Length: 124
Image (tube, rainbow, N blue to C red; front, side, top):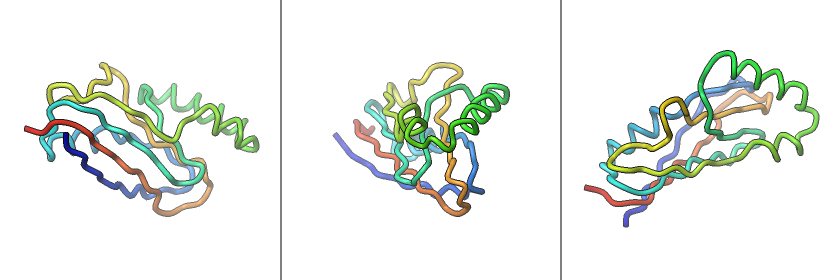
């Protein structure tokens, strides 16, 4: 069992939705991870990691919903998580056909935000 930690800096305008799936897949390839788990986590305040479809209408609806709740940070923190844990099976991220790993920044503060990616698994 091998543990690998990668960090991603995300340049944010303070209100950002970005897809991290290809980054995670590139690290699976780079480190030749056969089977295991990956945890994608953000320690950045008012930022979240979710697994959803990266579809413009859905993301627009999510943005509208979050705008309504932005003054109620406790509710947003409860609804959205800081991390996702996903399986890696036979060198592939097993998240289904349409799901993507999404980073959301609702901080209203521009600058670099941090995402930590931790792989635990077998390498070839």
